[in-house]
Image (cartoon, rainbow, N blue to C red; front, side, top):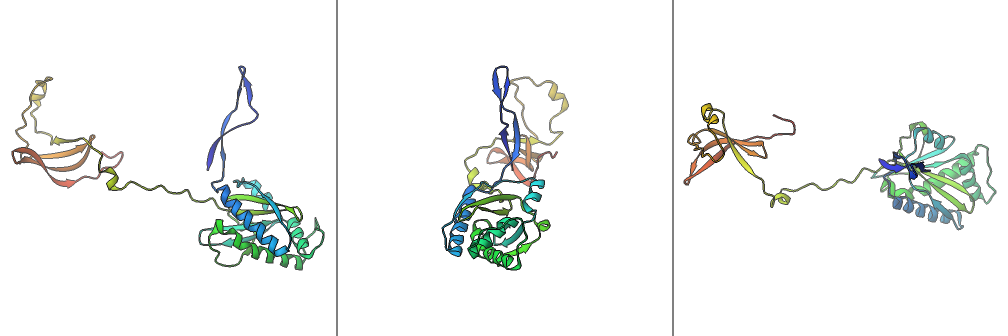
Length: 266
Protein backbone atom coordinates (compact mmCIF):
# COMPACT_ATOMS: atom_id res chain seq x y z
CA UNK A 1 0.00 0.00 0.00
CA UNK A 2 1.22 3.51 -0.77
CA UNK A 3 1.76 5.88 2.13
CA UNK A 4 2.56 9.57 2.18
CA UNK A 5 6.17 10.26 3.10
CA UNK A 6 8.58 13.20 2.98
CA UNK A 7 12.00 13.25 1.38
CA UNK A 8 15.16 13.94 3.34
CA UNK A 9 17.17 16.09 3.53
CA UNK A 10 14.95 19.17 3.55
CA UNK A 11 15.42 21.93 1.00
CA UNK A 12 16.03 25.50 2.15
CA UNK A 13 13.36 27.68 0.48
CA UNK A 14 12.81 31.34 1.40
CA UNK A 15 14.48 30.76 4.73
CA UNK A 16 12.34 27.75 5.54
CA UNK A 17 13.17 24.05 5.41
CA UNK A 18 10.78 22.21 3.12
CA UNK A 19 10.59 18.48 2.47
CA UNK A 20 8.99 17.22 -0.70
CA UNK A 21 6.02 14.89 -0.28
CA UNK A 22 5.96 11.59 -2.11
CA UNK A 23 4.13 8.29 -1.92
CA UNK A 24 6.11 5.17 -1.02
CA UNK A 25 5.24 1.49 -0.79
CA UNK A 26 4.95 0.24 2.77
CA UNK A 27 4.07 -3.20 3.99
CA UNK A 28 0.76 -3.91 5.70
CA UNK A 29 2.33 -6.81 7.59
CA UNK A 30 2.37 -5.87 11.29
CA UNK A 31 5.80 -5.66 12.87
CA UNK A 32 4.34 -7.71 15.73
CA UNK A 33 3.84 -10.66 13.35
CA UNK A 34 7.49 -10.44 12.27
CA UNK A 35 8.54 -10.35 15.94
CA UNK A 36 6.50 -13.49 16.66
CA UNK A 37 8.28 -15.27 13.80
CA UNK A 38 11.68 -14.01 14.99
CA UNK A 39 11.09 -15.25 18.52
CA UNK A 40 10.05 -18.66 17.22
CA UNK A 41 13.10 -18.92 14.97
CA UNK A 42 15.40 -17.94 17.83
CA UNK A 43 13.99 -20.57 20.19
CA UNK A 44 13.92 -23.30 17.53
CA UNK A 45 17.51 -22.66 16.44
CA UNK A 46 18.69 -22.59 20.06
CA UNK A 47 17.07 -25.99 20.56
CA UNK A 48 18.49 -27.46 17.35
CA UNK A 49 22.02 -26.15 17.80
CA UNK A 50 22.20 -26.50 21.60
CA UNK A 51 23.55 -23.00 21.97
CA UNK A 52 22.33 -19.51 22.76
CA UNK A 53 21.02 -17.58 19.76
CA UNK A 54 20.73 -13.82 19.47
CA UNK A 55 19.11 -12.10 16.53
CA UNK A 56 17.58 -8.85 15.37
CA UNK A 57 14.45 -8.48 13.28
CA UNK A 58 14.05 -5.87 10.56
CA UNK A 59 10.68 -4.31 9.77
CA UNK A 60 8.77 -5.79 6.79
CA UNK A 61 9.21 -3.97 3.48
CA UNK A 62 7.79 -4.18 -0.04
CA UNK A 63 10.84 -4.59 -2.31
CA UNK A 64 10.88 -3.44 -5.90
CA UNK A 65 11.19 -6.02 -8.66
CA UNK A 66 14.93 -5.53 -9.14
CA UNK A 67 15.47 -5.84 -5.38
CA UNK A 68 13.66 -9.21 -5.38
CA UNK A 69 16.10 -10.43 -8.03
CA UNK A 70 19.03 -9.53 -5.82
CA UNK A 71 17.44 -11.15 -2.77
CA UNK A 72 16.85 -14.38 -4.68
CA UNK A 73 20.24 -14.43 -6.41
CA UNK A 74 21.93 -17.70 -5.39
CA UNK A 75 19.50 -18.22 -2.51
CA UNK A 76 17.50 -21.32 -1.65
CA UNK A 77 13.77 -20.83 -1.09
CA UNK A 78 11.77 -23.16 1.14
CA UNK A 79 8.05 -22.53 0.67
CA UNK A 80 5.67 -23.16 3.56
CA UNK A 81 1.93 -23.31 2.93
CA UNK A 82 -0.75 -23.05 5.58
CA UNK A 83 -4.41 -22.39 6.19
CA UNK A 84 -4.03 -18.59 5.96
CA UNK A 85 -1.42 -18.21 3.24
CA UNK A 86 2.14 -19.05 2.35
CA UNK A 87 5.63 -17.82 3.06
CA UNK A 88 9.18 -18.86 2.26
CA UNK A 89 12.52 -19.04 4.03
CA UNK A 90 15.12 -17.34 1.86
CA UNK A 91 18.64 -18.57 2.68
CA UNK A 92 21.61 -17.18 0.77
CA UNK A 93 24.61 -19.31 -0.24
CA UNK A 94 27.00 -18.08 2.45
CA UNK A 95 24.22 -18.10 5.07
CA UNK A 96 23.47 -21.74 4.21
CA UNK A 97 27.15 -22.59 4.68
CA UNK A 98 27.13 -20.81 8.03
CA UNK A 99 24.06 -22.76 9.20
CA UNK A 100 25.66 -26.06 8.24
CA UNK A 101 28.94 -25.07 9.93
CA UNK A 102 27.13 -24.31 13.20
CA UNK A 103 25.53 -27.74 13.10
CA UNK A 104 28.92 -29.41 12.66
CA UNK A 105 30.73 -27.13 15.11
CA UNK A 106 32.97 -25.78 12.37
CA UNK A 107 33.99 -22.35 11.17
CA UNK A 108 31.67 -20.97 8.47
CA UNK A 109 32.92 -21.12 4.89
CA UNK A 110 32.22 -18.52 2.23
CA UNK A 111 32.19 -18.19 -1.52
CA UNK A 112 31.71 -21.86 -2.47
CA UNK A 113 28.77 -24.13 -3.27
CA UNK A 114 27.34 -26.21 -0.46
CA UNK A 115 28.14 -29.91 -0.47
CA UNK A 116 25.32 -32.50 -0.68
CA UNK A 117 25.64 -33.13 3.06
CA UNK A 118 25.50 -29.40 3.82
CA UNK A 119 22.45 -28.98 1.59
CA UNK A 120 20.70 -31.80 3.43
CA UNK A 121 21.52 -30.23 6.80
CA UNK A 122 20.12 -26.87 5.67
CA UNK A 123 16.98 -28.57 4.34
CA UNK A 124 16.43 -30.27 7.69
CA UNK A 125 16.89 -26.98 9.52
CA UNK A 126 14.35 -25.38 7.14
CA UNK A 127 11.86 -28.14 7.92
CA UNK A 128 12.38 -27.54 11.63
CA UNK A 129 11.79 -23.79 11.17
CA UNK A 130 8.62 -24.22 9.10
CA UNK A 131 6.44 -24.27 12.20
CA UNK A 132 7.71 -20.86 13.30
CA UNK A 133 5.94 -19.17 10.36
CA UNK A 134 2.47 -19.80 11.76
CA UNK A 135 1.87 -16.07 12.32
CA UNK A 136 2.12 -15.66 8.53
CA UNK A 137 0.69 -18.90 7.17
CA UNK A 138 -1.60 -20.30 9.82
CA UNK A 139 -1.40 -24.03 10.53
CA UNK A 140 1.11 -25.61 8.14
CA UNK A 141 -0.33 -28.27 5.84
CA UNK A 142 2.98 -30.07 5.24
CA UNK A 143 6.77 -29.78 5.26
CA UNK A 144 8.46 -26.95 3.37
CA UNK A 145 9.19 -27.50 -0.32
CA UNK A 146 12.24 -26.07 -2.05
CA UNK A 147 11.10 -23.91 -4.94
CA UNK A 148 12.88 -22.08 -7.78
CA UNK A 149 13.12 -18.34 -7.33
CA UNK A 150 11.48 -17.63 -10.69
CA UNK A 151 8.30 -19.33 -9.43
CA UNK A 152 8.10 -17.13 -6.32
CA UNK A 153 5.32 -14.52 -6.22
CA UNK A 154 5.74 -12.85 -2.84
CA UNK A 155 5.27 -9.16 -2.08
CA UNK A 156 6.66 -8.63 1.44
CA UNK A 157 10.08 -9.37 2.87
CA UNK A 158 11.83 -9.03 6.20
CA UNK A 159 15.14 -10.30 7.56
CA UNK A 160 16.32 -11.94 10.74
CA UNK A 161 19.94 -11.05 11.45
CA UNK A 162 21.67 -13.62 13.66
CA UNK A 163 24.46 -12.15 15.77
CA UNK A 164 25.26 -15.19 17.88
CA UNK A 165 26.68 -17.86 17.59
CA UNK A 166 27.75 -16.64 14.11
CA UNK A 167 26.56 -13.71 12.01
CA UNK A 168 24.18 -14.69 9.22
CA UNK A 169 20.82 -13.64 7.84
CA UNK A 170 17.60 -15.49 7.22
CA UNK A 171 15.04 -13.92 4.89
CA UNK A 172 11.28 -14.35 5.18
CA UNK A 173 9.16 -13.72 2.08
CA UNK A 174 5.37 -13.62 2.19
CA UNK A 175 2.38 -11.87 0.69
CA UNK A 176 0.70 -8.69 1.82
CA UNK A 177 -2.15 -9.44 4.20
CA UNK A 178 -5.60 -8.48 2.95
CA UNK A 179 -6.92 -5.30 4.59
CA UNK A 180 -9.41 -6.04 7.33
CA UNK A 181 -12.95 -5.34 6.18
CA UNK A 182 -15.06 -3.04 8.30
CA UNK A 183 -18.51 -4.12 9.37
CA UNK A 184 -21.36 -2.74 7.29
CA UNK A 185 -24.48 -0.98 8.44
CA UNK A 186 -27.45 -3.04 9.54
CA UNK A 187 -31.04 -1.92 8.92
CA UNK A 188 -31.43 -1.48 12.68
CA UNK A 189 -28.59 1.09 12.63
CA UNK A 190 -30.78 3.37 10.48
CA UNK A 191 -33.89 3.08 12.62
CA UNK A 192 -33.47 6.56 14.18
CA UNK A 193 -32.62 8.35 10.92
CA UNK A 194 -35.37 10.63 9.58
CA UNK A 195 -35.69 11.12 5.84
CA UNK A 196 -37.86 13.80 4.22
CA UNK A 197 -40.34 12.32 1.75
CA UNK A 198 -42.38 14.01 -0.98
CA UNK A 199 -45.01 12.93 -3.46
CA UNK A 200 -44.71 13.95 -7.10
CA UNK A 201 -47.85 13.81 -9.21
CA UNK A 202 -47.75 12.40 -12.69
CA UNK A 203 -47.28 14.89 -15.56
CA UNK A 204 -50.46 16.48 -16.75
CA UNK A 205 -52.12 16.78 -13.36
CA UNK A 206 -51.86 20.57 -13.40
CA UNK A 207 -53.01 22.71 -16.32
CA UNK A 208 -50.13 24.67 -17.90
CA UNK A 209 -52.07 27.93 -17.71
CA UNK A 210 -52.21 27.61 -13.94
CA UNK A 211 -48.42 27.73 -13.68
CA UNK A 212 -48.27 31.34 -14.85
CA UNK A 213 -50.64 32.49 -12.14
CA UNK A 214 -48.75 30.94 -9.24
CA UNK A 215 -47.29 33.41 -6.76
CA UNK A 216 -45.69 33.01 -3.32
CA UNK A 217 -48.44 32.39 -0.79
CA UNK A 218 -50.91 31.08 -3.33
CA UNK A 219 -53.01 28.05 -2.38
CA UNK A 220 -53.06 25.28 -4.95
CA UNK A 221 -55.95 22.85 -4.47
CA UNK A 222 -55.10 19.32 -5.50
CA UNK A 223 -58.31 17.90 -6.85
CA UNK A 224 -56.88 15.27 -9.18
CA UNK A 225 -54.94 13.21 -6.64
CA UNK A 226 -57.47 10.41 -6.45
CA UNK A 227 -56.75 7.74 -9.03
CA UNK A 228 -53.68 9.51 -10.45
CA UNK A 229 -50.28 7.91 -10.71
CA UNK A 230 -47.79 9.50 -8.34
CA UNK A 231 -44.19 8.94 -7.24
CA UNK A 232 -42.79 8.79 -3.73
CA UNK A 233 -39.47 10.66 -3.60
CA UNK A 234 -36.69 10.87 -1.03
CA UNK A 235 -34.22 13.73 -1.47
CA UNK A 236 -35.21 14.06 -5.11
CA UNK A 237 -34.89 10.35 -5.95
CA UNK A 238 -37.87 8.20 -6.84
CA UNK A 239 -38.13 5.22 -4.53
CA UNK A 240 -41.68 3.99 -5.27
CA UNK A 241 -44.68 4.56 -7.49
CA UNK A 242 -48.34 4.29 -6.62
CA UNK A 243 -51.82 5.70 -6.95
CA UNK A 244 -53.06 8.73 -5.03
CA UNK A 245 -56.28 8.70 -3.11
CA UNK A 246 -58.00 9.49 0.18
CA UNK A 247 -58.03 7.35 3.29
CA UNK A 248 -59.61 8.22 6.65
CA UNK A 249 -60.23 11.75 5.42
CA UNK A 250 -56.57 12.35 4.45
CA UNK A 251 -54.78 12.26 1.17
CA UNK A 252 -52.71 9.07 0.89
CA UNK A 253 -50.55 7.19 -1.59
CA UNK A 254 -51.03 3.48 -2.20
CA UNK A 255 -47.65 2.01 -3.15
CA UNK A 256 -47.83 -0.33 -6.12
CA UNK A 257 -44.19 -0.55 -7.29
CA UNK A 258 -40.79 -0.22 -5.63
CA UNK A 259 -38.18 1.56 -7.73
CA UNK A 260 -34.52 0.67 -7.15
CA UNK A 261 -32.42 3.59 -8.29
CA UNK A 262 -28.62 3.63 -8.52
CA UNK A 263 -26.11 6.44 -8.69
CA UNK A 264 -26.20 8.06 -12.09
CA UNK A 265 -29.50 6.45 -13.16
CA UNK A 266 -32.28 8.55 -14.60
